Image (cartoon, rainbow, N blue to C red; front, side):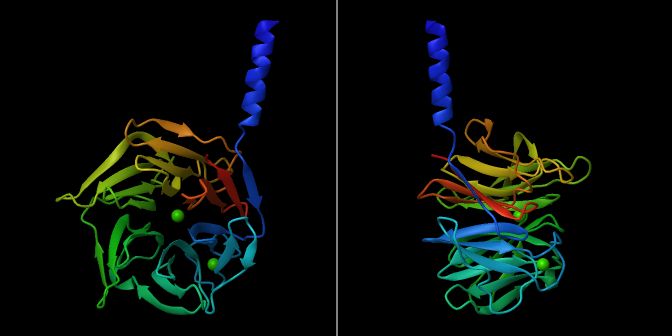
Length: 291
Ligand SMILES: [Ca+2]
Ligand SMILES: [Ca+2]
């Protein structure tokens, strides 16, 4: 009897610690989320899952932290297939196939763009700010990371690291000058990897984390030694998940989530400890409390 009571208590406690989740519908093919203050900005590539089509049907959706759609498209000019984004001083920098759109968040004006056709990139994917004058940008078609200087005379320079097939997500730990990079990989199955780049090393030291494989897309540091990655698992069958990797120990833990259909470029709200994941295949946003 005592054993049964203990089992029951364990069961009740397991049920009561189920993570708090929310699913927000009403998106088409959301690829990326970035937040600032009380607002989130979601890059939606448009009606179809065509990440490199110049079809003009992309949008940037503004959402509150409670999941209310505040504006179904803030952009005053057409965008094609917006993906990874970063915010610096009220300006949204968003990857759009072969350029970075520069969008004023207050007015929605697409003020300018940074053209990557001179360096031959045709599938820009993720963007992260290194500081308020510098971006890192991944180019999936080339397997490269670019450093973009936003200072007058703008410069685009590929980092001197080996090519990363199917490169996708980026996040930057400014305190330790570490750039986390993930990939979808190439081939069959297309197993991608997680890399950590010490950006101050010379030559640049790119290190793959052993035993971490998947079809990775989004990535966020959740503290100074752990990153969360989204993993599509299989492009043909919705079977995605999210994992946390401890960079100190190498330990990988799957987050307790339902099957995630096309989990793309996530965002972690450090203040409220909530993880926001666009489900690109499903057309919705999945939110889960991590604490
Ligand atoms: Ca589109
Ligand atoms: Ca991505």
